[in-house]
Image (tube, rainbow, N blue to C red):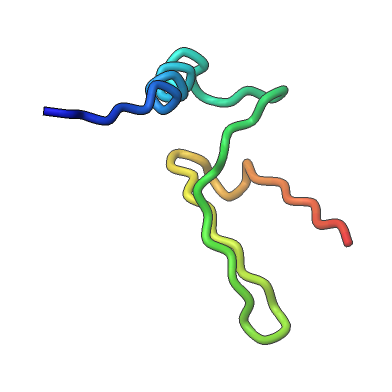
Length: 61
């Protein structure tokens, strides 16, 4: 039986496991939803365990 494998996919998976979560110098992707409602933009982040007081957002342009 012929089976296809992608060695780069496995290498990428292994690198992600070894690198662990993001750091300040190399942030990781953050799950979020972003959409527009009329003249407003709505952004919802998935931040379990983080209080709203701990979040500081700056918007440019």
